[in-house]
Amino acid sequence: MVRDSGTYVFLADWINNGNRSSDEALYVSDLDVLIGATLNLNGLHLYTYYNGIHRVMAGEGNLFGGGIIIDTQVVPLPAGAWLLGSGLLALIGLGRRRRKS
Image (tube, rainbow, N blue to C red; front, side, top):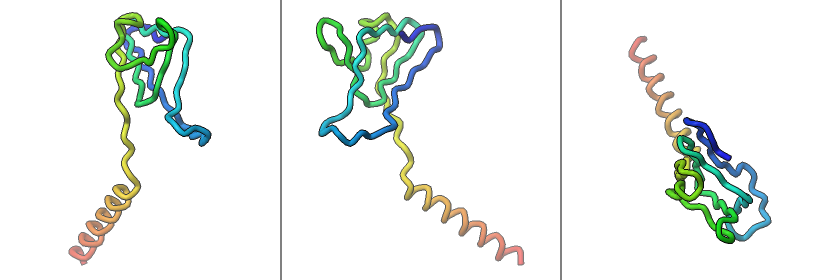
């Protein structure tokens, strides 16, 4: 149950089990997302036993208690972008050092 006003639950799959050919999924027997609460699926498949096995989708909060169900994935900044950024900062620092001397 996701309850209380302002509660925010973010699903995350931190471990790749490596034993599936398809996306991993989470199955729950009951799901309640009450008014004022938010469930972020984060691109993961969530299934519940609502009229049989039912895949929970963004926007279906009215089926599960009136809360908000969203599906926004957090996209990590690639390592290459971090490397480029740190290299640019180093070049700026070297340029400032040369100007001062």
